[in-house]
Image (cartoon, rainbow, N blue to C red; front, side, top):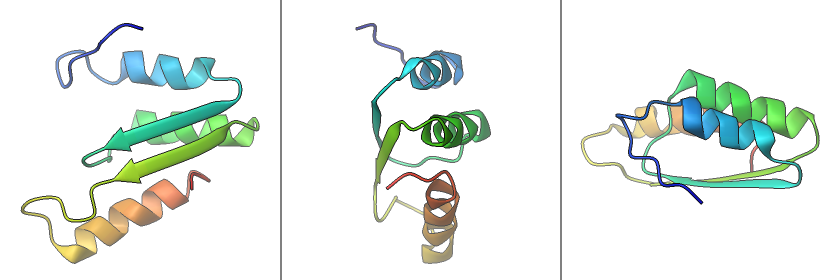
Length: 80
């Protein structure tokens, strides 16, 4: 599997991997706010892919309301 270094590679390699998933997508991130990735996760869920996202519960320098907003945006994709 290739290694993509963010942010230099941009979201395209990640979006492509999510689009190519047939059964499951598991994502572990520090913080997730990238709209193309969120849209790709939502589309994967809509086509029946099991989508799971693990995020950092207390990202450094972020307010609790910002973390809750991130959680809501991820939940809106259908991810668990």
